[in-house]
Structure formats: C-alpha cells, structure tokens
Amino acid sequence: MYGGSFNPLHLGHVRCMISAANQCDRLIVVISHGPNRGEIDIRQRYRWVYQTVKHFPHVQIFVLEDDAPTKAAYSEETWYADAEKVKGFAGEPITAVFFGDDYSRDSMWSKCYPEADVVVLPRDGISSTAIRRSPLACWDMMPAYVRSYYVKKVLLIGTESTGKSTLTVSLARHYNTVFLEEVGRDISARSGTDLWMLPEDFTDILLEHKVKQLEMISRANRVFFEDTNCLTTLFYVNYLEGEEKEKNRKLAEAISDLNTYDLVLLLGPDVAFVQDGDRSEEIAADRAGFTALLKGMCEAHGLQAEELNGDYEQRYRKAVELVDRLLEEEHG
Image (cartoon, rainbow, N blue to C red; front, side):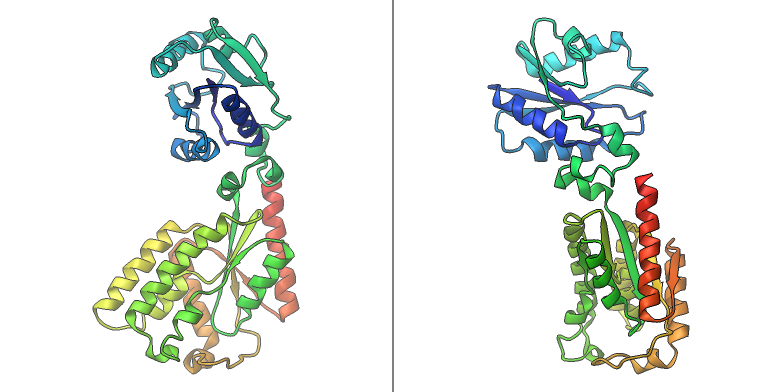
C-alpha cells in the first residue's frame, strides 16, 4: 500500500506511486480524507490519483475517512483502527508499505503494519504544504492535470470595437499562456450577417464557449485569458423575442452561475470605433450607454470589473499591472 492525503497531489506523489506500482503485483493507494480539515474536495483528489495510476491495471484506490479537525489531532489510537479498515479492503495480508522520505521509518505507516516490509521512496523535496501556500510559485511541482485547479482566470469584456480581442491575444503572448477567443464571431456569420441569426445560434455560442473554456484552462500556464463570456451573449439574447429568448436567457444565467473569475477587465469606449463587417451602428451611437449596461450586468452577477481606458498602450500597461498584481498575491 501507499497512502497520503494528496492535498494537492504533486510530482513527488506521482513518482512514488509509479515506483511502488512497478514493485507490486497489487498496489492499494489510500487517500486519507478529513472532511473537517478544509481539504480539497475528495472527488477532485480521487480524480487526480486515478489519472496518475489508471494505466496500471493492478492498482486500486481506497478512500479512508476520519473526523479529526487537524492532522495533529489524528491520534495514534485512530491510526490502528483505520489500518484495520485498509486491511479489510485489501482482503489479504499487506506485505509492503511504501511512503515518501518525508516520513521516518518509525512513522505511523510502519507502526500500523508491523508485518509488512517498509520501502522508503524519494519525494525530491516536493511539498503539498508549499503548493497550498503558493501554488503558482510551485507550478513545476504539479502534474498538468492538477495545475488547472490553480489557474487564474481573467475575463475581458467590452462593447464592440474596444480592442478586447487584440488585448486578449497580447496578454496571452505576454504571459506565455493560452486564451479563448470569442466563439460567437464565426457562429454569428452562418447567415452571412449577424442580423439574420437564428435563436439556436445563441445556444451554440453559449455551449461551445463553455466547452472550449474548460479545455483551454486545462492547458493554461498559470493564467488564462477569456475574450467575452456568456454575459456578453446574454446582452444580445435580450434582443430576441418569444420563447427562444427565455430559453437562451436561462442557459446564459446557468452558465454564469458556473463561471468564476479572478479578474474582470472592462474596456471602455474611448478609442475610435472601427466598422469591421456588421458591427452594430446602434451600439456605435451610444457606446458609453451600452458599456454601462454591460457593467451593470457584471455587477448583477457578482463580478466587479476593473475598467481600462485610454489608448491601446495605456490599456495594455494597465492590464499587465493588474494581472501582475493578481499573480504576485498568489505567490504570497
């Protein structure tokens, strides 16, 4: 057996699991779960462990739950009772106990399984505590499938022709990461013009954007940039009529409830309006008013936006300043 809380899982854990699996005909990975300790959701930690060992058919995962409020409160009496649960799951003698070199040879692991061989594996000095304290500073200590849990998400919004799409790409290039472009641009052109969009086009925009968002976050390097979101689509859904309007409105609201952002950048309308294709002349005539409406929608959905104004260089510099601040706070 090999056990830990994996809160979060890191490359030290990964290497230990692989080494242990290579030396066993059957390996049980035990996830210690304390629902009273404020740990990462057990479903998330189980997923991480599964992603690590799923290529080993002889590895099983067992969740061992206790009610201790802290690790220090996890008493020796409980150790032995919990070890019996693990033995019961195994259904046969546990002949080897693997643990990282951050534990001593006379730790709880060897005490609870005195009949088993003790195998100490190198952890390369990687620590879950250090990752929890400053995940972005410990980025290289985490597998790719764990990093997405800690990615900082930045949303850029604004009315037409405020430079948000260009700024989104520029920021992604600046921070060497990925971005999600506005998916509605291609979908709205299915009829050659957004003036003749079908109601289902808005449904497609909402769903496709969310799916792509999840995929891009999984590939991000510490920070992820998103060009518009479901609230911008909701802004245009309000111009629909009939039953389809209400269906799309509910969908947009539901997706908004699922979304979380660490920083929202609202681009002001104080740059020249450029007519690019079918951009709305109605919005062009009252850009300040429509920007205020968009800001109000954000606030109504719990998003506090930082406004970017000035020329393109000023917006870029201000955005970099705000993102740097966000990342520095995360670095502690």
